[in-house]
Image 1 (spheres, helix red, strand yellow):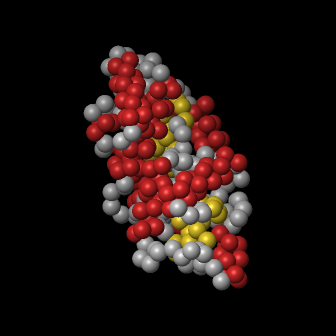
Image 2: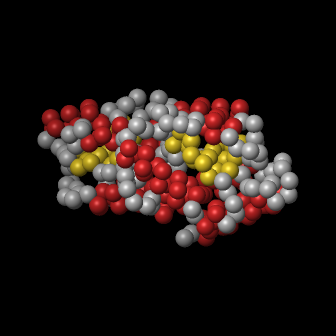
Image 3: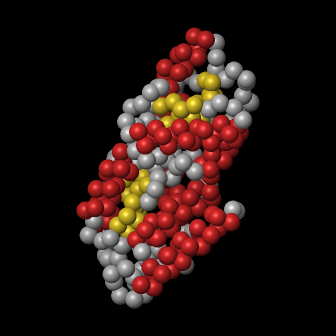
Length: 269
């Protein structure tokens, strides 16, 4: 644990405790800001289980449980409740919308921002989960977990994201690709499954014509539509998403969500 990270966490915990003592606009001793964990939403049962496990892991973390932080889930698409509905159901106090999203795209910049602006309680939108070095380590772990994951010198290694028309999202993915390149000691470039170039399908076709393998490192949070598309793209190696369908979420990811919440609480103060 770095000194800067530990200092930031301590400051965030102090902000949460102060909010609990002050109670926002409510009476002294009322609850600290609620943590509204905002995922994309999916119809895939495995993806739903993965996100449910992450939200449960966050809610059960001692740092939040002992401070009485209310944790609720919300979804920007497919599932209910919406962020607006989740915020409207809060009895009072304030809230931090924590995006369970890996980059800052339309959902963070528009959907969640609008939800915060229209909320009846003071609300801020925390940063997306990525870029972050803890995600880099998890992505490397997913590669090493894959059977036959030894990379050849001429493999085309791609960090594969869902894709967004928003420039900030592309910059976030490029940032993560650069961090991964440093960790792996080789070139890693972005590819996308929709909405942005280059598309993974085009990369695979070009590499196949050149006699090269495509290695796809999934930069997706959970199983679902886009992970299925990655797996069907014909890559030589395709890793699993950050979250597994079953089992507990990675401790690093839970800690990352908590850090985003703490920063949001500090912004409310």
